[in-house]
Length: 205
Image (tube, rainbow, N blue to C red; front, side):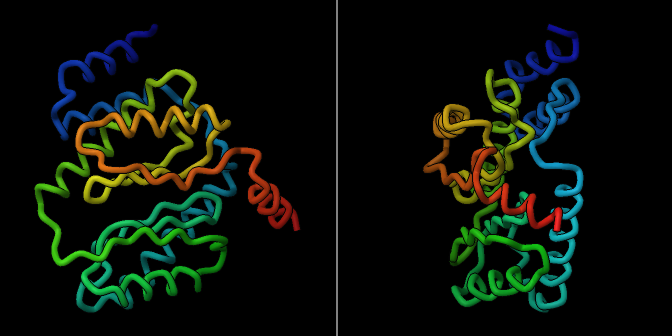
């Protein structure tokens, strides 16, 4: 085991209860453990472009910060919407806007409708996400760089590409065991999923 990985492991034991330290852990561990993503470089560029277009669409429409609480994760044109809004109609409107973006193949709308969001809940959600990212990075048999993590009101949302069913089950179980997690929702697909083959064929054309 190299020095950088030993250092990152030490951060887990010393700072496991600190949200800030969890962020430091993820940053350090990512530098120590680099795993090739299943997404191609071209797909990553396309996903970044989609993210920019969604963000711009929300900004142009969001006169009264109606969509300020919405988060987006994108993997090969599949868009996961999480976060909170106060009006059910805003949840519907956000999804409609995303579908209008070129390159979007699928939209998973997990936006929650709430009266208000407590800071304490938000802070703990951030801690859960960062801690889970750290756990996935050091979990044997998990290609952590292929997973996106978002937590809203104790619900963990996973998105990305799993090597196989065993890896996905392991990632879900790790998330479930974290203190404060109420449920885990997976939008992860396996690397041999037909949707990925269709995307590759479309890109070639």
